[in-house]
Image (tube, rainbow, N blue to C red; front, side):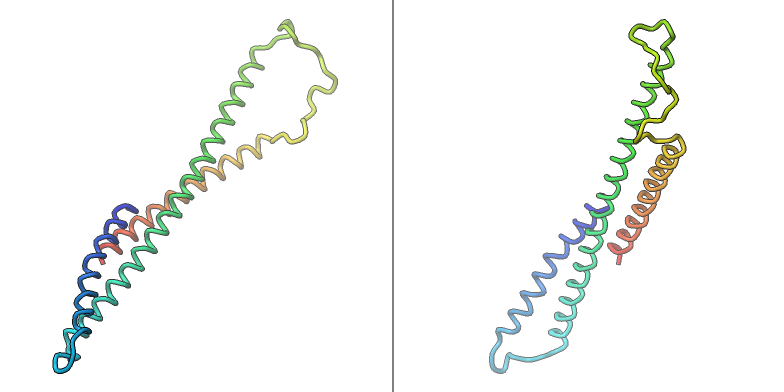
Length: 155
């Protein structure tokens, strides 16, 4: 959608140049040729319309770029969370295979203590739900931006 909007913006350059050139040629007239007529007014109006369209298209492109950045950030956060979960699963599987007769195992005092900086299962679940909800919100925002871009290009 962003690329299509960029192409639409690029397509407005030539009409603007042609209209501006026509106005420049009209301003170069002298004497009796110098007139202010409806054609000149329409050319000026056309320049204003094209300038306005370019500004709106550029705003759409900027919004799309920002949304792409937010989507990338959400994706990276989900990827990191998934990697953490895979690593935790690997640790759990390793611990599951241990027995009292496993090599290099020793008994420690207070084995049920929670090390500082640990995350509780509830915190982990909350964080995961937050990541998923955020990603869904960003995807929904992307749909809205794409629809807005389509409407803007059509207008």
